[in-house]
Image 1 (cartoon, rainbow, N blue to C red):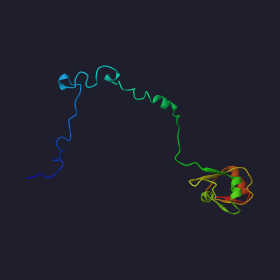
Image 2 (image 1 turned 60 degrees about the horizontal axis):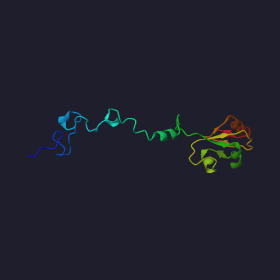
Image 3 (image 1 turned 60 degrees about the vertical axis):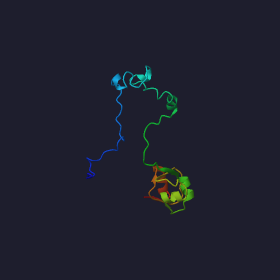
Length: 148
C-alpha cells in the first residue's frame, strides 16, 4: 500500500543531492595536504586572493567622480521670471503650474514653480499654487494682482 504524501515522506530523487567534498581532512580523504589549492604561492595561502580582484579595477575606480552628499526626492521648483510672465499672460489671467506648462514657461514634468525677479509686471495677475520670491510678490501686488 502506497503511503500518503506528507511533509515527513517527501524526499529528493536518488542522486539529486550529493554530499559536498570535505577538503583538508588528511591524506586518506583524497583532498589532504594542499586541499586542492596546488602548491605554494599567494593563492594557496589563507586570505591569498583578497587584493587580486581589484588590481585591474583600481584606475577605473579612481577615474570615477566622487558622488557624495544627498539628493532630495522632492523636485525643486522651476523658476519663471516676471519678465517672461508679463509677456506670456494678459491682465486678470490665472497663473498656476498647469497654465505655465501650457505656455511652455516650465517643463511638462514640472511639479512646482517659483516666480522670481524684480521687474515691473504692469498688469494684474491672479497667481495660484505657485511660489514667489519676496520681490516678485511685491511687484505682482503693486500691479494690482494677487497671490493665493
